[in-house]
Length: 140
Image 1 (cartoon, rainbow, N blue to C red):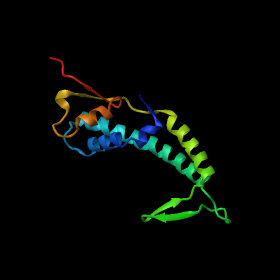
Image 2: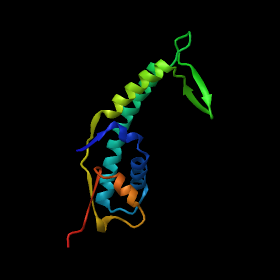
Image 3: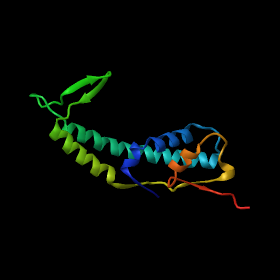
Image 4: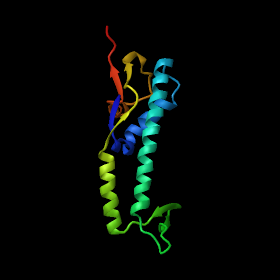
Protein backbone atom coordinates (compact mmCIF):
# COMPACT_ATOMS: atom_id res chain seq x y z
CA UNK A 1 0.00 0.00 0.00
CA UNK A 2 1.08 3.52 -0.73
CA UNK A 3 0.47 5.81 2.25
CA UNK A 4 -0.26 9.44 1.42
CA UNK A 5 -1.48 12.66 2.96
CA UNK A 6 -4.29 14.41 1.08
CA UNK A 7 -2.07 17.44 0.43
CA UNK A 8 -0.41 15.32 -2.27
CA UNK A 9 -3.30 16.17 -4.60
CA UNK A 10 -2.19 19.82 -4.63
CA UNK A 11 1.46 19.00 -5.41
CA UNK A 12 1.78 19.92 -9.07
CA UNK A 13 5.16 18.15 -9.41
CA UNK A 14 3.63 14.81 -8.40
CA UNK A 15 0.52 15.33 -10.50
CA UNK A 16 2.65 16.21 -13.54
CA UNK A 17 5.00 13.25 -13.04
CA UNK A 18 2.08 10.81 -12.77
CA UNK A 19 0.61 12.36 -15.90
CA UNK A 20 3.89 11.80 -17.76
CA UNK A 21 3.91 8.16 -16.69
CA UNK A 22 0.32 7.60 -17.80
CA UNK A 23 0.71 9.22 -21.21
CA UNK A 24 3.87 7.50 -22.44
CA UNK A 25 3.98 4.28 -24.42
CA UNK A 26 7.63 3.62 -23.63
CA UNK A 27 7.23 1.41 -20.55
CA UNK A 28 6.92 -2.37 -20.87
CA UNK A 29 3.62 -4.16 -20.25
CA UNK A 30 4.14 -5.07 -16.54
CA UNK A 31 5.05 -1.49 -15.59
CA UNK A 32 2.25 -0.07 -17.76
CA UNK A 33 -0.26 -2.28 -15.96
CA UNK A 34 1.11 -1.14 -12.58
CA UNK A 35 0.81 2.49 -13.73
CA UNK A 36 -2.82 1.89 -14.76
CA UNK A 37 -3.59 0.45 -11.30
CA UNK A 38 -1.86 3.42 -9.66
CA UNK A 39 -3.80 5.91 -11.79
CA UNK A 40 -7.12 4.25 -10.96
CA UNK A 41 -6.32 4.30 -7.23
CA UNK A 42 -5.12 7.92 -7.52
CA UNK A 43 -8.31 8.99 -9.34
CA UNK A 44 -10.51 7.28 -6.75
CA UNK A 45 -8.69 8.91 -3.82
CA UNK A 46 -8.70 12.28 -5.57
CA UNK A 47 -12.44 12.04 -6.20
CA UNK A 48 -13.07 11.51 -2.48
CA UNK A 49 -10.79 14.43 -1.61
CA UNK A 50 -12.39 16.71 -4.21
CA UNK A 51 -15.94 15.85 -3.11
CA UNK A 52 -15.05 16.79 0.47
CA UNK A 53 -13.32 20.00 -0.68
CA UNK A 54 -16.37 20.94 -2.75
CA UNK A 55 -18.63 20.24 0.23
CA UNK A 56 -16.52 22.61 2.35
CA UNK A 57 -16.65 25.33 -0.31
CA UNK A 58 -20.44 25.16 -0.38
CA UNK A 59 -20.67 24.90 3.41
CA UNK A 60 -18.51 27.94 4.16
CA UNK A 61 -19.22 30.22 1.19
CA UNK A 62 -21.35 33.33 1.52
CA UNK A 63 -25.02 32.75 0.76
CA UNK A 64 -27.65 35.12 -0.55
CA UNK A 65 -31.11 35.70 0.89
CA UNK A 66 -32.32 32.65 -1.02
CA UNK A 67 -29.76 30.48 0.79
CA UNK A 68 -27.83 29.78 -2.40
CA UNK A 69 -24.09 30.47 -2.77
CA UNK A 70 -23.11 33.91 -3.98
CA UNK A 71 -21.30 33.40 -7.26
CA UNK A 72 -18.93 35.88 -8.86
CA UNK A 73 -17.18 35.65 -12.21
CA UNK A 74 -13.47 36.34 -12.49
CA UNK A 75 -11.43 35.51 -15.60
CA UNK A 76 -14.41 33.52 -16.89
CA UNK A 77 -14.29 31.27 -13.84
CA UNK A 78 -17.09 30.87 -11.34
CA UNK A 79 -15.92 31.70 -7.83
CA UNK A 80 -17.79 31.39 -4.57
CA UNK A 81 -17.57 34.39 -2.30
CA UNK A 82 -15.96 33.67 1.06
CA UNK A 83 -16.22 36.37 3.70
CA UNK A 84 -13.45 36.61 6.28
CA UNK A 85 -15.25 34.33 8.74
CA UNK A 86 -16.19 31.87 6.02
CA UNK A 87 -12.68 31.88 4.62
CA UNK A 88 -11.14 31.23 8.04
CA UNK A 89 -13.49 28.29 8.68
CA UNK A 90 -12.90 26.96 5.15
CA UNK A 91 -9.14 27.31 5.56
CA UNK A 92 -9.21 25.42 8.87
CA UNK A 93 -11.34 22.62 7.39
CA UNK A 94 -9.02 22.36 4.36
CA UNK A 95 -5.91 22.24 6.56
CA UNK A 96 -7.45 19.33 8.44
CA UNK A 97 -8.51 17.61 5.20
CA UNK A 98 -5.06 17.98 3.64
CA UNK A 99 -3.41 16.61 6.78
CA UNK A 100 -5.41 13.38 6.72
CA UNK A 101 -3.54 10.17 6.03
CA UNK A 102 -4.81 7.85 3.37
CA UNK A 103 -3.80 4.84 1.37
CA UNK A 104 -3.80 4.23 -2.32
CA UNK A 105 -4.91 0.62 -2.62
CA UNK A 106 -1.87 -0.37 -4.66
CA UNK A 107 1.73 -1.23 -3.95
CA UNK A 108 4.49 1.15 -5.01
CA UNK A 109 5.64 0.58 -8.57
CA UNK A 110 9.18 -0.81 -8.78
CA UNK A 111 11.17 0.39 -11.76
CA UNK A 112 14.74 -0.72 -12.35
CA UNK A 113 17.18 1.68 -13.98
CA UNK A 114 17.18 -0.40 -17.16
CA UNK A 115 13.35 -0.22 -17.33
CA UNK A 116 13.26 3.59 -17.21
CA UNK A 117 12.92 4.89 -20.78
CA UNK A 118 15.10 7.81 -21.82
CA UNK A 119 13.39 11.20 -21.76
CA UNK A 120 10.16 10.18 -20.03
CA UNK A 121 10.89 11.40 -16.50
CA UNK A 122 13.24 14.14 -15.35
CA UNK A 123 15.30 14.02 -12.18
CA UNK A 124 12.68 16.31 -10.56
CA UNK A 125 9.93 13.84 -11.56
CA UNK A 126 11.86 10.96 -9.99
CA UNK A 127 12.23 12.91 -6.74
CA UNK A 128 8.53 13.85 -6.78
CA UNK A 129 7.50 10.21 -7.27
CA UNK A 130 9.56 8.91 -4.36
CA UNK A 131 7.29 6.77 -2.20
CA UNK A 132 4.91 6.12 -5.06
CA UNK A 133 7.52 4.63 -7.36
CA UNK A 134 10.60 2.80 -6.13
CA UNK A 135 13.41 3.47 -8.56
CA UNK A 136 16.00 0.78 -7.94
CA UNK A 137 19.42 0.18 -9.45
CA UNK A 138 20.02 -2.83 -11.64
CA UNK A 139 21.94 -5.51 -9.78
CA UNK A 140 25.08 -6.41 -11.58
